Amino acid sequence: MQKRGLAAKVSFGVSILFMILLVVLTYINYSNSKVNTTGLLSSERAKSIQAGRILLNTQFKKATVGIENLVKLFSSNNYNYQEVENILKNINNSMDFEAMYIAYQDNGMIVASDGNSGLPTAQYDPRKQNWYQEAANLRKTLITEPYIDNVTKKQIITAATPFYKDNKLLYVVGADFTIDVLQKEFNELGNAEGAYMLLMDKNAKLIIHPNRDFVGKTLNATKEILKNYKANNIDQYGRLPYTHEDGSKKLGRCVPFGINDWIICSNVDINFFSKKTDDILYKNIIISITFIILATLIIYLLVKRFLNPIQIIQN
Image (cartoon, rainbow, N blue to C red; front, side, top):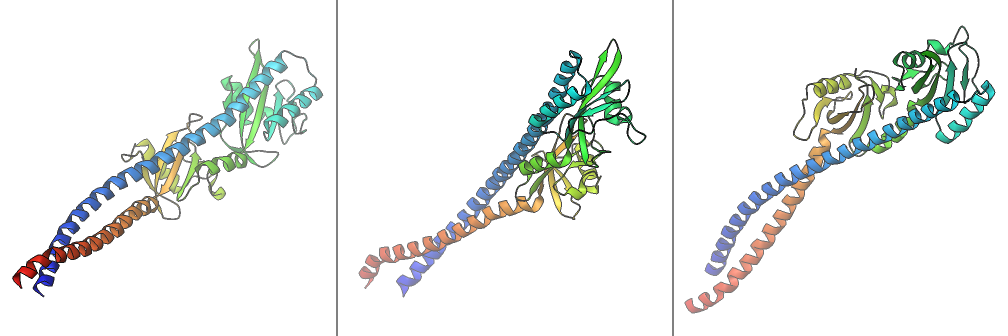
């Protein structure tokens, strides 16, 4: 009985020491893992933002280069309207825009790749459209803010460039993107477990968002994002806090896009970070408890064995 009591006491004492040591090590490991996991997850969202920027830049670059090359082609050749339409149609078939077109300053004629060509009417004059007037006034290639197209009624973005000769505007060439097409690829890059990406303008109006009902709207959430973004209210990982429309707390990483002062944000639910780090803690606790139980049992058996000679001598 004495041997068993002594073995139990020694085992219990050593187990307490092991327990204290493991608690300290578990806390240190958890703290380090939390920092590393948060940093890794933040890095992954930063990569998503970069991928989104590359996607949009590629699409817009394709459009601007395409229409600028068309200006060079049309300015050096005297094509009739039908020839121009055929050229636009062939080029757009390879570039896959919603439409490509040219609008002439002298008579307002618009020639489009989709066949919607004609002279201006009381309902539509291309020279009065924002994309035309902005390009004419700036005298350079531009990307417009999103707007509802008068013909298709779709929400689109236009790339437009003017052509001047002897300081006189002759025409403007344009190419349209639909938000739906851009959104599909953009969302595929940004959506992940507990995370998504958005694109908004400088006034917090949404251009691209996984929830299409939010597109074209300024939300309380985007206002808060913009406010914190401008104030540089971010944590050590570059994330800013905000409350989503559904009431959930989010962390967003936002960067300027470079066109029209638009902003790209990659957002993650705060609970997602907590869940990932808590999973690490639970695993460490389970491992520690298992180790303590096994260590206690082994120590108890070893102590009993080492106490056998002492017990024999005493007897």
